[in-house]
Image (cartoon, rainbow, N blue to C red; front, side, top):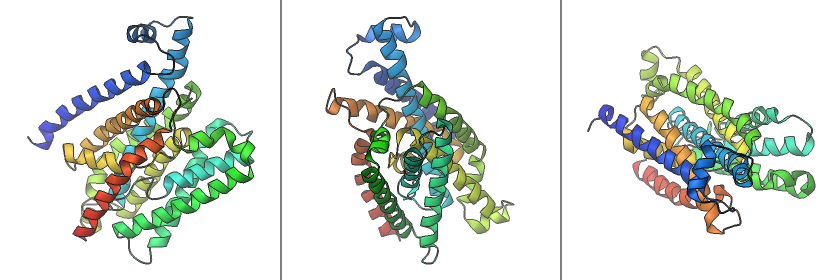
Length: 330
C-alpha cells in the first residue's frame, strides 16, 4: 500500500480513535453517571446536577486535553525537521520547562494580569529556552545527542528555578502547582477559550507550511537550490513550534514526550510527507493526551494523577530506545 492510498485509511482510523478517546473522557469521572445518561446530557443539557458535571467539568477537560495533545505533537514534528534531529521535541529541548517557568513568574509576580497574557508569556519563555539550547550547542555542532543533552541541562536549570520559586513563594504559586506537573484536571471553558485560538491558528499554519517542511528535510543545499529561503523558514517554523508548545503549556503545564513519540509513530504509519504527517500527528497527539488523562483518573481513583507523569512513564523508555538507535547510526 502506497503512502497516498494509506493516508485516507490512517486519517479515518485516527478520527475513530480520537472519537473513542473523547467518549471515554466524558464518560468516566468521580461522579458515577450511567453511560447512556452521559450521552443524552451531552446533546440535551438540562439544569440537573449530572448535566452540570458533564458540561462544566468533563467536556472542557476533554477538549482542552485534545487541543494540548495536538499542539505538542505538531510542535515536536516541526522541531524534528527544523533541527534534523530525531530526538527533538518541546520537552527535550527545554521549551516546555522555559514556558512553564515564564508562566510561574507571571503568576507569582504579576498575579493581577489578565489570563490572555499567559500564552504570550509562555511563548517568550519557550523562545528563551530554545535560544539557550541552540547557543550551548552552536560551538560543538548540532548532533542529535548533544542537542538532547543541552535540552536536558536547560530543562534541569529551568525546573530548578521553578522549584526555588515554589519554595520562596509557596502561597502565590499554590494555584499552579498541580498544573506545572502536567495535568488537565479542573480545566474549564475559560481555559478552552484561552487555548483554542492559538492552537487552531498554529495547526492551520503548520498545514500551510507542511510543504516547506518537506523541502527543509532534504537539507540546506538542496532546499536552497529549490528556491527556499532556508534560514528564514527555519526561524519561522521554530517560532511556530515554540508557540504551539507554549500555548499547551500555558493551560496544561509541561507534558513531556508527546512531541517526541507521536511524530515518530505517525511517520511509521503514513511516511515522511508532512502534508500527511501534520494532520495525523494532530489526531494521534490529541488521542494520546486524552486517553492518558482517562488512565490517570483510574490509577488512584477517585484521586487525580497528573497526566504528565503517566505519559513520562511511557515516553522515557521510548526516548532511551530512540537514543540508542541514533547512537548506533552515528
